[in-house]
Image (cartoon, rainbow, N blue to C red; front, side, top):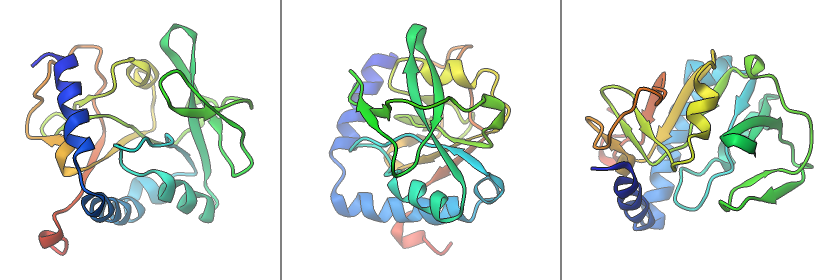
Length: 188
């Protein structure tokens, strides 16, 4: 399936999740993230402000702040580039043409200072840790020379055994993929 069609299919699938499904899967993902070595060792964590169909990132931000970690969020730049800026409860945010909240001002954090990036997307493959994002290529460009941990948290609806979309040579593979556990298998 071509990427554009796959993205539309995934947006529709994710839009149909019930509030109960979202809450249960978000809790599973929070538990997995907060006990992961990548999270525990990170001092500077890059996180997006999630949209309604994505894994809820607000609890990650709050927990990072509570643990004294620095949270940085992305700001889009010309030529499909982006940078990460410090995010606190006092940060001023603006909404982009994509509907994403990003920092209005501040000083970008050096890429090499970031320990962990929670990479957003619409679909992930278990075998290759390939991802398909929203189509701008911002993350693939940014991650091309990123040396920290590239981790994704995924609802079960986002995960496939093998990519069901074309994986291009410029697509950056993830280091870790955490998938929400099924309620019935939570303790397995």
